[in-house]
Amino acid sequence: MEFVDQVAVSVQFFDVRRSKKDFLFSSHKLVSDFQLKFNDMNVFDLFAMGGPLLMTIITIWGIAMLVFTVQKVIHFFVQQKYTESGLGLILLFGSLAIVSGFLGQAVGLLMAFNAIEAAGDVSPALIAGGLKVSMIAPMYGTFIFLFSLILWGVLKEAYVRKSEV
Image (cartoon, rainbow, N blue to C red; front, side, top):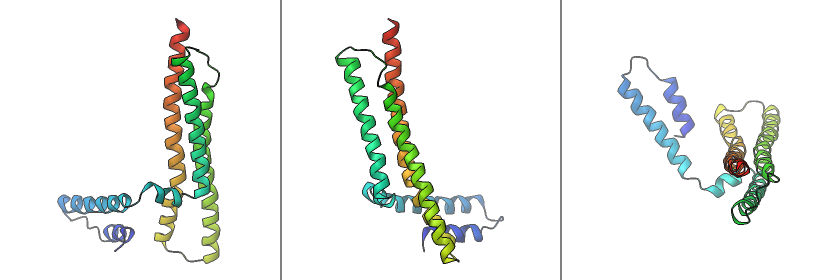
């Protein structure tokens, strides 16, 4: 029985009179089944599921963000040059990653809805699987954005502290 089917059966046959212990046990089983399915996937599977073209573009934005971060670290801590120029590029490339992820999700959902419209009757499990896949690219872009935001904040604080001295 697929995970989605198990969730549907659990929700459909949930009886209010069941004990809290039974409910917690079935909830724990569903979560552990989900973790097993997710743990079976590796990074390359997620990369391919998210769309190789889009995921490559997001990766390029992430690499560019890392290049400018390393450049600013070298300027700040090795060459002792404390300039603000180039700091915004770290945040820019992180922002491009998240925006690219959401753009890819929008395009993918639009194509999926066109296919659903053409097919007519589609099972809810198929739609749920498509929505799950559509979240991979924005999630990847969000991780890159959060990483760039942390790096930008640390370097910005270092710049502010050194410029006050």
